[in-house]
Amino acid sequence: MITINLSERQKKIIEIVKKNEPIPSKEIAKKLDLTRGALRSDLSVLTMANILNAKPKVGYFHAQDNSYLKEFDELYNKKVKEIKSAPVVIKEEENSIYDAIVTLFLEDVGSVFIIDSNEALVGVVSRKDLLKMTIGETNINQIPVSVAMTRMSHIITITDDDTVFEAAKKIIDYEIDVIPVVKKIKKDSKERLKVIGKVSKTNITRVFVDFRLDI
Image 1 (tube, rainbow, N blue to C red):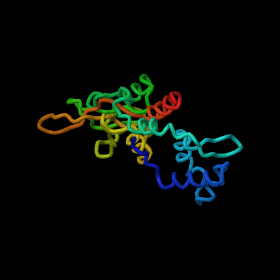
Image 2 (cartoon, one colour):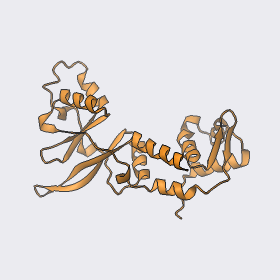
Image 3 (cartoon, rainbow, N blue to C red):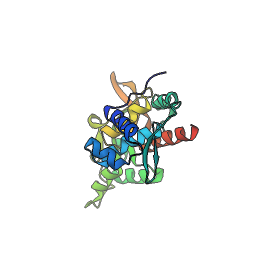
Image 4 (cartoon, one colour):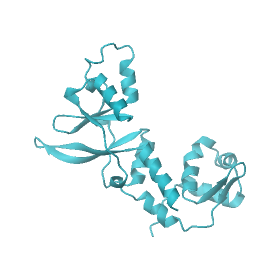
């Protein structure tokens, strides 16, 4: 069995709980000289992993049953191709900001990926990007979607063979809502990226919820 790689802070939290259980999050934060908000993600991971148990108005306990470890390790190492969802794409040269807004709401998504005539990824637009463009603009039908999109040099991507943990870490590290899943293609003797899926915060959350229901 592969050992789960806990962060140093998570290890310290476990030791604090073991020595002081039951202990509320406020006291854990105080002992680490951090805010409760700074510990929220660590405590969530440790409780979802059954390393810690929590009781409202009581505090955190150290879990005695470690039989979950193998399953949790399998969760972290699940491949992106197992959890990705279908991307919503539009072509750069054929669509305006208005078209992107309509697509976003009809498909009920938070971001739309932009591709060129060769189906290569060239950009992405989010609700926030489109909202910024509509403020003060009256003729969004005439403004190309490329004006609002984030271009390739600033887009974070993942592949089918990356893990759920790697996808989740990129979402947290880069403070983004969705990551395009890509594969390499060759067009005009150049290597480009084609969008074959997406992983969002919703995808990640669903994986953890489904895992919790199974154990």
